[in-house]
Amino acid sequence: MLASPRSVTRQRRRFLLVGRRVWLGALVLAGPILVAAAAQATPSAVFGTGPRGVALTGGGTSLPLGPESVLVNPAELAFEPAPSLLIGLRASQYSLSYDAGGARNDYPAELSKGLVIGVSAPLVRPSRDGWHAALGLFAETPPDFLVRAHLPLAETPSFPLLVGRASALNLAVGLGAGYGPFALGAGLEVLATLSGRDVVASAAGAPSGVSDELLPAFGPSVGASADLGAAGRVGLAFRSVLRADFNVDVAPTSLAGVVTIAPLNVQGIAHYEPLKFDAEYSRDFGPYNLVLGARYEHWGAFPGWLGATIDCPPGVPCGTPPPPPADYHDVVVPRAGIERSFDARSLGVTARLGYSFVPSAIPEQRGSANAFDAARHALGVGYRVHLARYLPLDLDGAWRFDFLADRSHHKDDPTGPLGPQVTTHGTIVTWSFAVRLTL
Image 1: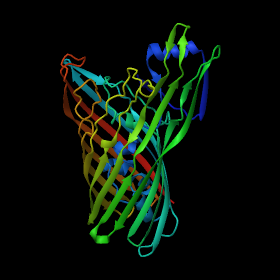
Image 2 (image 1 turned 45 degrees about the vertical axis):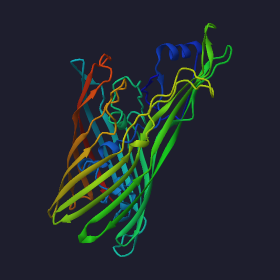
Image 3 (image 1 turned 180 degrees about the vertical axis):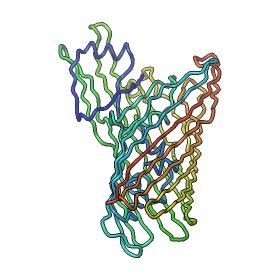
Image 4 (image 1 turned 60 degrees about the vertical axis):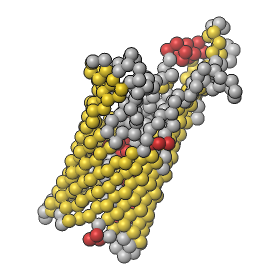
């Protein structure tokens, strides 16, 4: 059964009255069921957080990023010297395709957009040899909706770890505190979730209805950081699993008093972010700042996107076994970056360059499933312009290019609809821009 896309608006609750036959006829004959739930992951997990994170292709765990540290490493908030306000935007353009049956097929993926706002506020005056602490808030949201999920049938070609993960609200709060060169931090990531249940209830002669409730889903994070002076900086961050389920119940009833419909239950996961652990080291070499890091992502615990369509009574088979496990595997993402500062009396400029290699967590699609993915090479460039003499403003910009390595999937059944072999290709281009005001 197909869970097709829909925008979740900012209404807290909707109730739609429709005829029983219209609802059940659409469900049974047309097939698609509308489901929107928590974020198909967060855009920051794919592209990086803020322009600096985009330019460093996801780096920043050991760097004082300002409000962006809430998502990257909340411990770094403790080193913020002054309150700051960040306002910006991000856009990502996909160009994905797959070769099957001797023809090139373009995969439809719309432009991903995000509006960014962040605030950081020190709670005590920072001191190199004393206490320091700060609060932070960061949000990135699509301009048209809070979250949108698209979960097709397993046989339908899709790129679940690339396209769906860019359409979500990204909201987090964090606190960092420390003494001297050391700091600890904790954060809470909040995502929009269509929680509870959508229930299509029916009674004799009564209309059916659908009741949705938009609720938050939470994912905690912790971090540690150390500023070792000339020896460099070290940052560690741990982010827990972030998961949001959807569940649509269809009550048993009949169509025109002739066909009896069994109770249906459309269930699955609209969002899943695995457990992550980041480690990073950075050090200044004169005007240069070298950044080296890696991320571990525990995809091996991912259970799969869709569950069984019909809930069978205990001990009674009803012909709808749950889908096979996804068999995703863990990955390690190495990355490196460098920044070069150019300081003048009236203007400061920083140039940035980053690279990361992102292995694929999805195995080769040898059966009927077509959840495509491939290893990615990510290259980022960016800049910061500091208007020190005129205004307490920083202008940050970044451009990131993701190149998907060609990947072939050899099918066990060569007579299948996509032929004996499917080869995927693609690129993703991301732009990010922000204005930072130091208060």
